[in-house]
Length: 125
Image 1 (tube, rainbow, N blue to C red):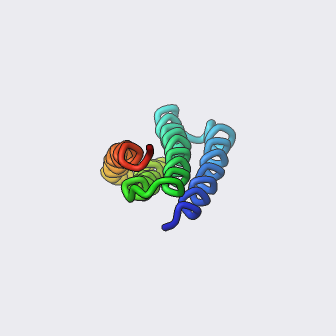
Image 2 (image 1 turned 90 degrees about the horizontal axis):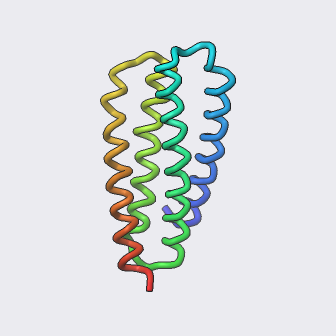
């Protein structure tokens, strides 16, 4: 994956996050229980935060030689898929076992932030 692809995917996933948030607010508000709606909103919020992190990683990867920054971008993408994706599916399909996948995405994000910090520390002047 190139920095350009990381930024592009981040922007696409941010748009999807906004659409998912609007769908949750307008399409799911009367359908889901308040607890399920909160879970869905958590998925949206964390997706949007980490799409920005992906794009930051892409910009840094384009300007610094530190490979750690690209690894961070991959981890942010993995976290979006595993954390937010599992919560979306859990809520929309009422499949509780998907909750076991969610923490793996959270760990990917935590490790990704560490790699981003390391990459910035090593690669920036």
